[in-house]
Length: 163
View: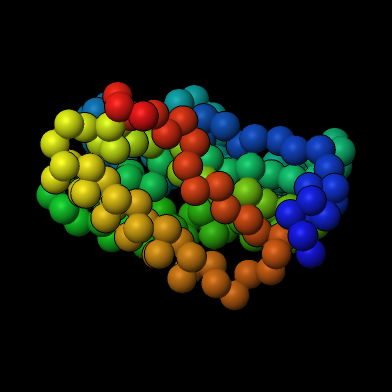
């Protein structure tokens, strides 16, 4: 299937916004587990029934924005995504696939760490690239056995001062 073919079959889309992209590294969700991030901006906990309701309302594609750095201690150079976050994303992906929807998973704003790519300091830019590669390697490995109905948007709102 080509990318244009995929766009044709994706149909109407809906964004699961203000859930898994709620960002923690500024402290107001300190100590929260992935469930705390998901509801931290006032949204309800995502259920299979909610996703099925979206499908029943005429949506064919679900976009799941994720702040992946919520699941890592990147400030200290640890780019390993917490399995609880990965598992929660997978659960919601499966809800959508079970509802016969296509799914887009992305890295969404994520506290603005993308600004590191625009840093004057080469070492900071290199750190951003290492984190990016590590993040998407883990996500790709985790979801490697999924069908073409799961696609990835590697970045959103990827602004750096020098870009």
